[in-house]
Image (cartoon, rainbow, N blue to C red; front, side):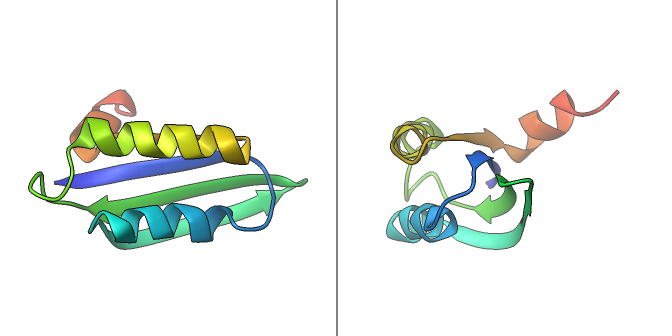
Length: 89
């Protein structure tokens, strides 16, 4: 299953390291990552691949949402198909 992970918030040290560490700990493979910083605001879109055998989507969403709260950023994890459907006009 492919996932889209988005991170938005005020830039600070360790955002990418924290998110990628959580993904690695849960055997989630990062396929593509794109990030930028504009006027001190951090924005990242990450495409990842995971098997339901490793971790359930809802569990990963909960872990990253809680970590986002700690980092003061908004982290969302969506199934790629849902993300694409939401962004198709």
